[in-house]
Image (cartoon, rainbow, N blue to C red; front, side, top):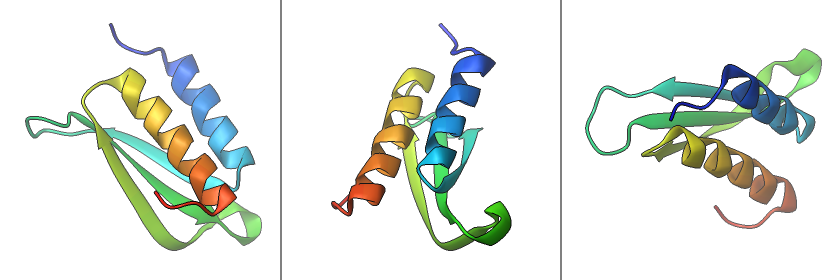
Amino acid sequence: MPISKEAKRRTAQHIRRLGYNVMFSKLARPGASYSFALRKRGRFGLSTGMTYIGAAASEASLLESALGTAQRLVQGTSC
């Protein structure tokens, strides 16, 4: 069952509050069907620094993984 656009929007909004920009995408390769990219938000909300990339087999696990990765980055624990 696909995840609603509202759920993606809320997750992205929460990640932005943690200080990261996020981009979700659907992959055209087998296995991991969805991916996300996180970048630290800098001045004026522009992305700076390293990009953290993750992948998932479903949209639900994609949102959980993206949010969890952003939270670990804020806490300073390893991803």
